[in-house]
Length: 206
Image 1 (spheres, rainbow, N blue to C red):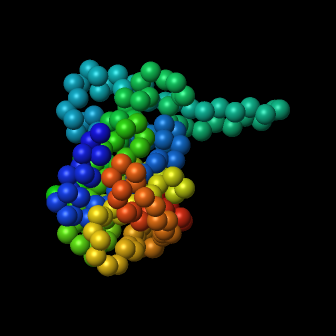
Image 2: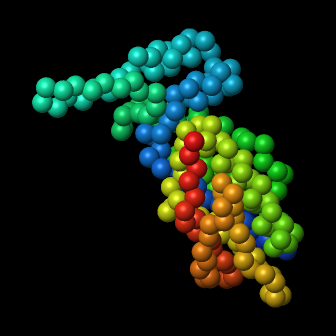
Image 3: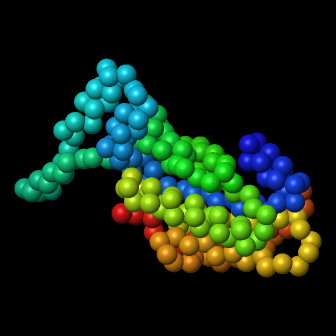
């Protein structure tokens, strides 16, 4: 609902809207514990709760045995599937992405491991420039937080109601590489002409 309201409002003003959606690859498995602890410190978490979380992460190891061989590795990220605390701790880390210092042209909405960033612009050229500035911030965040986005599920969409002829292509750069393909289609609920750009090869990983 928030997404729809933002898009409708800006399109009614004659603006161009870019919507970028991100899907984290192996989300809960990728939750990096040092980043979660930092998020708790930044949120001024009560000391007792912080220490409980710190103890929960301490000295965890994965062990695999095969025949007469045993391998052991220290674990610093991830949660068991279906764990009670996993979703909440994941949100603590992911919240730092939502609260990055974006430009005042954007609105960010997060749900579980999915993130949508909507950006408004006055022109197609501006619509291309603004997302590229924001993508560089997201790329840096991903590197710092040991996160990878799923390049097959993440996408960018350009939306406009303008009938005049103007360039409808935009290039979105991630890691200094342009990556897009386009498919044009109609949105029934407002008959908005749209151009969609799907990420193909980008890797957001440190």
